[in-house]
Length: 84
Image 1 (tube, rainbow, N blue to C red):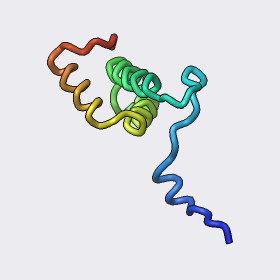
Image 2: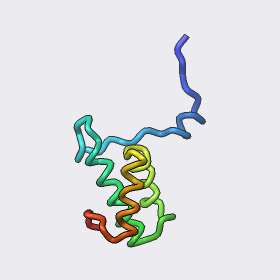
Image 3: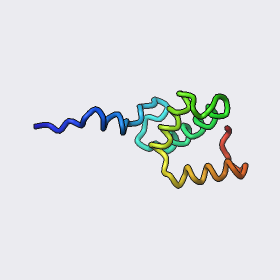
Image 4: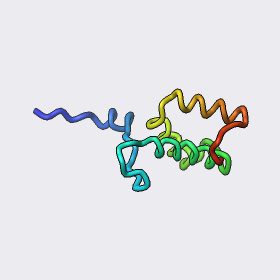
């Protein structure tokens, strides 16, 4: 008998979709770009905008929590190196 995860579990933990800009296994750039895209989207629209939530879900899934915390602190201090 094959194990088949229930649909509820699959909906709860969706995987990050493939992005052709980042074809390799190392997903560091995809993580960073999604973080930037989320903050740019949030700045232009709002955090509740669907597209912004998409980017947030991706960076939350790919990025280590320590990186996100560090970047958030840098944004608050006005020392973040990325262009938002």
